[in-house]
Image 1: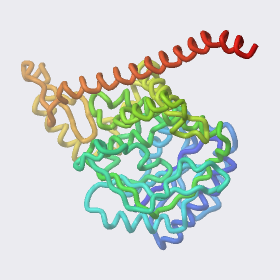
Image 2 (image 1 turned 180 degrees about the vertical axis):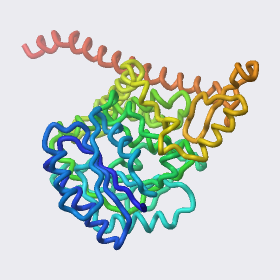
Image 3 (image 1 turned 120 degrees about the vertical axis):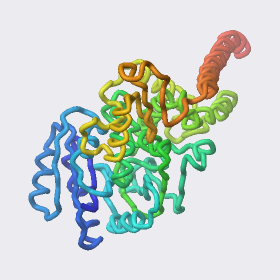
Length: 408
C-alpha cells in the first residue's frame, strides 16, 4: 500500500466527518491510489466511534477504525502505527481538513526524495475568527539537519507540526514509536510531535517544510484566555523537552537560553515583549518551562512509554533486528537506543566482563556541565526576578506614607 493517513480522535463526533471527507477528496483528486485512513478513537465518551464507523461503511475509501482505551494521543498514534500498511505515513488532527491537492503534493515531494525526510506543510486557519496560532504560512521551502548543525543556530521546535507531518515508513521504523510521556492526555500534556521532530533530527533525517501540502486548522480558540491556556500547555511541553534532552543534546534546548535576554528586558522595563495581546510574557514562558521540566523529572513517567519498538513489533526495522541478533550472538546485549544509535554491553556471562561497546562514543562531560550551568542561569534569573519584585513591593510600602502625607 502506498499511503496511510493517520488520525487520532477523542470526543470529536461533531468534527471528525469533515476531516474524513477532506481526506477522501484528496485521495480522489490524486487519481487512482492505493491508500487508507487509520482512525484511532482514544477513549471517546461521545458518539465518535459510531460516527466513524457509519462514515467508513458509507464511503468507498479503505478505513481502519481502531480503539485505544488508554488516554493519550501518543498512545493512539502508536496503536495506528502498528496496523498502518502504507509506505508513506501522514499524520493529521481531527480538527483539520486537508486541501484538495494535499495528497498530490505529498506524493510529488516524496518521489523527489533521495534520503529520509520528516516533512511538514502549510497550515492555515480554517475559521478566520480563530486566533492566528498553531498555523504555519511560511511561503518558502525550509530544511534543517543535524549535519548542518541547525539546532545550534535556530529553534527547530515547531518547525513541523503534528497536524501536518509525513514520513516514509523506513524513517518511522528507525525512530520507533511516539514517546507516550508527551502529547495531549499524557503526564506532560503536549509535544508528542516536537519530540518526534527532535528524534528525527538526532537520527540524521532531513526536516523539511514545504509551502504547499496545505491543511486547514479549525482549532476553535478565539479569546485571549484560550490563547494563554494554549501557550501555557506548549511551554510546559518545552520544559519537558529541556529535562529530556539538555544533558545529552543541549543544542535542542537553546531557546530557553535565548529567552533570558528578553526576559531581563521585561524585568527592567515592566513591559510584556512576548505575546501582550493574550497576556503571556517571557516570564510566564520561563515559569511554564520550569514547571514542565519539574513535571517530567518528578511526576512519575510511564516506564513502558520508552520510545523503542518491542523485539517482536511488526514496525521494527528488519535490518536493525538482524544487526542486533548478530551482536547478541557474539556475546553482546543491547543496552539502550538513542535515535539511530544502538549501545551494547558485553555480556559478562559470555565475555568475562569486557568494557562497554558502542557504535558511538559517549557524550563528553563538558556538555553535561554546560547544560547544568544553563539550568543554574535559569534559576538565577528567577531569583533575580523574585528579588526585583520584592524590592518594588518594599519600595511601594515605604513610599506610601509619604504619598499620603503629600496628598494631605
